[in-house]
Structure formats: C-alpha cells, structure tokens
Image (cartoon, rainbow, N blue to C red; front, side, top):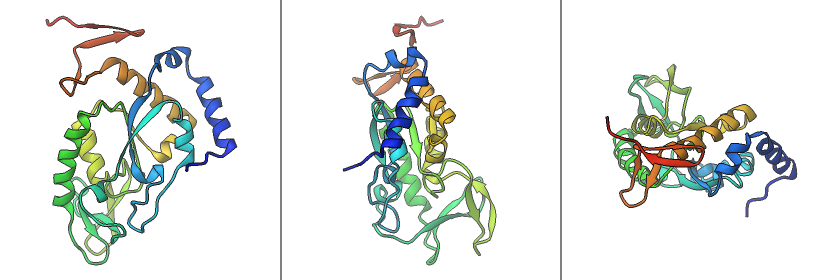
Length: 223
C-alpha cells in the first residue's frame, strides 16, 4: 500500500489549484502516462529495490492512469542483476555491465524498438522517466570510456529510442517533476497532447487529423 504523507498531499492540492480552470474541466477522465516502474514502488532495480516516489504519485493522484515500464526487466534481465553504465561514443553509447563488461546494447535496443511500437497503441499522453538510469535516463547520463573514465553525457538507451520514435510526446524525469513549475508545464502539455492527438482505439493509432479546441473536435480537411 502506498502511503502519501500529509505534507505531500497538501502540496498536491495547492499545485492543482494553480492550474488554469480550462485544465480542470478538460480532465473528464484520467490520462494514461508512462512511468518507470521503480518510481511506483516496484522492486525492479538492479539491487532488488525500488525508488518509490510519493511526490510524483501525489502530484498525479487524480490525473494519471499509470503505464509502468522497466526496460531492464522487460528485456529479460533478472532481479537482482549487475549494475550497468553507458560507454563509448556519446552519440551511440553502449550499455555494458560495470564489472563483467557484458554488452546488453543489442538486447535492450531490440526490445525497446518493439516496446515503443506497443506503447504507441496504448494511448499514452506523456512519460515520466527515472533520472540517472543508463536505460531510462532522459538527460545528462554519464558516459564512460572502457576504463571507466567519464567521457561525456547522453540519454539512456530506452529513453533515446522512445523520444526519437514519439518526438511530440511530453516527457520529463522524476527530478523535473519535483519542481512545481516544471510539473505544471508537464501537466499542461499532457492535457494538450490528449486534446490535439485523439487516440483511435479501433486502429490503435493517434489521429492527427482530428483538431480539438476548447473540448470540441473536428476532422481537418485535406489540402
């Protein structure tokens, strides 16, 4: 059971009260948001633990239908497992275990390519990634040389494939969501994405020809 501290719950109510009225009336139903599984308290990390984030859970309490994802576990790696890091070219980093040097790049990449295609059919309106993760980190993930020396910064393997495949999807990480201003902006982007990119459950695709404004939608005419 997830227990939300009173101070966090109060913070959430205060933040929600600052959102423009149009965003409140737009939330007729919850929006589906992808999230790194460990942030919801699932024990999927390399050490067998989690990174339960009560602030995120409270901040989206009445807004989100979660779609949890753990790249390492879903691509077939065990719990617990050897920690990994990114190495090599910052533009095309490799995902390698820290001690044994096993390269899991192909495994992760093949799974991620299939996963993003599946997520496109889930009707996601945003994604919250775990920061500092070699698979899910959105920004500033340390990339090392083969000897372990820092050589640059980059994006986690899964996160990189996700944002490249769905460039219009609102994304943020757990550190960003803890900032009230970034949280508000993310929520606004998520709701606007839901309005502007209506998801067709029959075709399993976003219909970008549907134009929505103030809750009213119509199909745009081809030019």
